[in-house]
Image 1 (cartoon, helix red, strand yellow):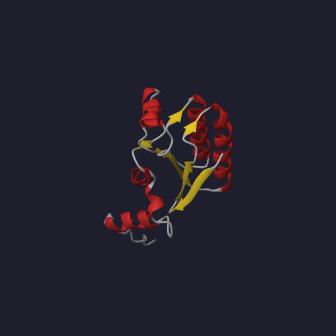
Image 2 (cartoon, helix red, strand yellow):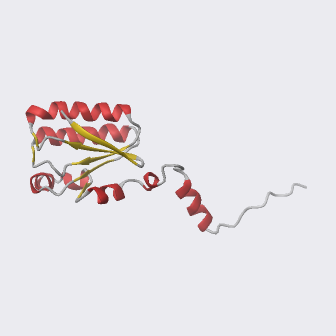
Image 3 (cartoon, one colour):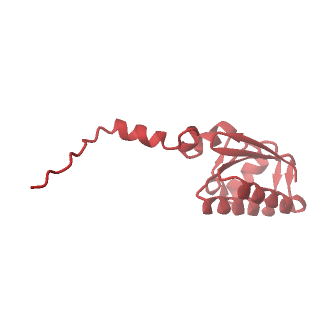
Amino acid sequence: MELSVSHQPGCLVVAPKATDLRFDVSTDFKQALFELIAAHDTHMVLDLSNVEFVDSTALSAFIAAKSRLAVKGRTLVLCGDSKGVSGVLRLTSLDSFLNLRPNLQAALAALPSSCNSPQDPLAACREKLKSSHLPLLAPRAHP
């Protein structure tokens, strides 16, 4: 299965080149996703913008990818506004489970905030602590 893969800060954006994810290509699709997950310790956005149809084997691949990423402490977000895909995901109630977003920008925004600061993943935490105005504790003097 041919996939388009691009690196964004904190994640991989993966887009299948096939317009239909049916039984005959879903096994290869699933294997390709697993290989990417194994090779990269990062979140994943699955861009389904060009996909017009998915069957149950594709849904299974999405769920399996989400599970593999979760084991690594990572997130899967799906995006794409194709009626064929979003309709099936909504019909099966997988749209919220698989974090379906209408477009790539919304999918990237749905990723954990640490993805927005790839140089220093703790920067957001440090900034939050600075702005919390917590009093500093002085060490106790021992008699």
